[in-house]
Length: 449
Image (cartoon, rainbow, N blue to C red; front, side, top):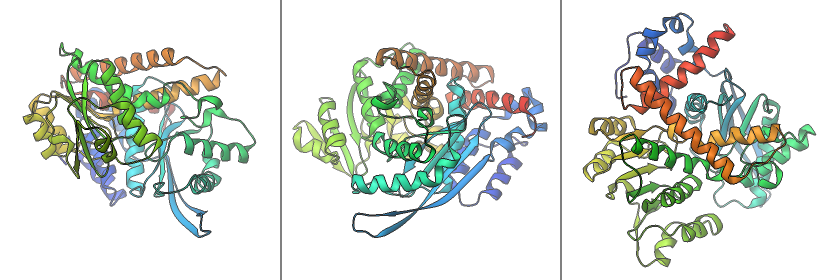
């Protein structure tokens, strides 16, 4: 890991390694937070005495269970699923559910740990948690996905509730999957408890702008970083990794703010369109046809497709990694710096490696960490919970305005906290410290629990 730890924090990190063997993503996430907390213990020595950090690094509850389900051929399949309820000092556990073959306990814990601080930064009353399964939805029929979701919730429902734990979507889990899960929860509990899931359909309790929120929020945060440097997105060349929900709506908002998005990617390759991405065509291919991005190049003469290409080698001024963890390495960061990149914001969870972050810092590039830059999704989920609690429905324009205000406040909090603790311009330190202090104060108030 890049960056040394304060002498008071090193033993805590070693204990995390000892208690959580083999969970490399979780180790990386914890180290990234701990290396910024030295100044906090100087200002608040009572946090060390109360072992707040040790408690924050240990989930309140970890649930692991099997999910048996029947495929379309009648064959029984067995998957493993997880729900890690990390911290509820600020409110009910809040965090998505991920369906992907890479999911194991270490990934779910890293996501849940990050979620604690991200949710705290929103200023809304939500704790942090995360869930997932190694189920692969690719190539599965609607019926298979429904049966899997129903089996998953048959076990998980007993741990959920609008005042206990509120899941949402993540990679591999969209409105369709949330619908199946909510339906099974309603069936088992005999309650239309709409606040127990977010990311729902508009006809049954969903929030306008929730689908767009993570991508929009990342762009709003980027715009705020540039504004702090007396600049803007207007006329900037932008590359965005991924071609899913976050990448699509980050592209849309960047284009609306005057930027030129020239590239996106999926697991198979990269498309470069110097004319600027045709968002309608991209959405047709990815959302309706569920095809690869290579189909875009076949239909758009100005586009070039690079199989297994690296999107970070394309010259740009703004880069938004919106795919998955550790996708942007130190080598990739150097390529971006050399090609004139001035701002990077994480639309995904921990997509930049520690070496990449260090490279951006040394080059003076504005870097927005995921805890801050991609908090728009969970912030709008909390707004959906507010609407459900009041039996209300807000307009798209009102919800987007609330989102933009929340992202501006998160930027200001990170910026000012970094200044206060002696790391001006370091949004990672600002996000970690601001989120940690808020959670720590709540834990201190509630006693030794």
